[in-house]
Amino acid sequence: MQIEKEEMNQFNVHLASHYGMCFGVRDALAATRKAYDENDVTVLGQLVHNPLVSKELTENGIREGDLDDSLMDVSGTVIITAHGVSGTDRSRWESPHRKVIDTTCPLVNKAHAALSSLIDLGFFPVVIGKKGHAEVNGLTGDYPQAIVIEREEDISDVPHEGKVGVVSQTTQPIERVNELVEKIRSLRSACEVRFIDTVCSPTKNRQRAVKDLAEICDLIVVVGGSNSNNTSELVSAVEQLGVRAIQIERPEDLMLDWFLGAKNVGVTAGTSTLNQTVLGVSDRLREMSKELMLKDRNLNGKEEILC
Ligand code: SF4
Image 1: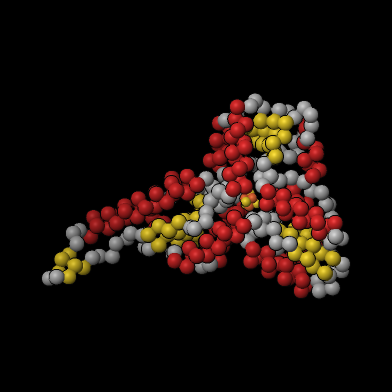
Image 2: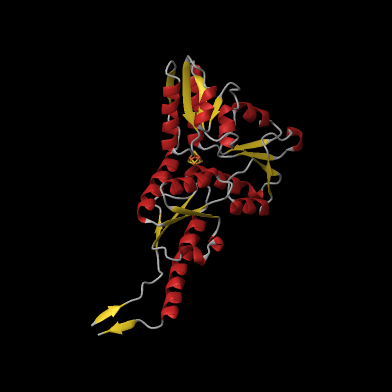
């Protein structure tokens, strides 16, 4: 007896081996949560590029300020985010009348130290990263001569001779950083170019894990805020690997129709995404897979048994 089944519209769900909130963001969030009982707390910028976390902070009375705010308007406790700040901004905010909680990630501090060591050795400062991003502003804030390279065209601003010292924003894709460094070396062959790799290991692990997922999945869901840089980087990485990417912020954003015909669906998340949100998305996807299978069964009627 042979049982012939109609092809079911069920899919497998694969969670990336590394995903979601990194230790730097997690520690910054934990330090901020400890300040929920204090009055008058202001985060200098966006603590985490994640709307769910922003909502939680607002509900607990934490204000969002700006590094450039007038110091006169901000009292009480101020929180420096995991993205870090320049030395100039840090000293501007330090005051005996204000408590400063510094949640700068140690790996961002490492990038600051790398850039400053290059400058001390006489290298011209170059940062590969996103122009205007909080971390990049923090890295370059003490060095008005510094150049930010976001794309190849920006290399035209790099000096034609002398020593050029390059670091990177911690969340940049390492392959792109390496390509840009090689491009600087070839376009500025008269310069001594020294590169210190400051892309952080959680970012590298997540980028490697997304490649592994892309090998087995026909669709990858990237969970993270629409204004999160590393979430957008993951979306681009998936698309460059030739796999369809869907970016969502929460399980409720998932639509059943997106998964029609999918066999293997991957899930990953940016470093600002709460792990409970990612697990909620995986659970919802598993439910959807079952819903699609049941829908197929209802459409196709009973399985046909051929003798
Ligand atoms: S992404 Fe990397 S550098 Fe940024 S907070 Fe997380 S661990 Fe730190």
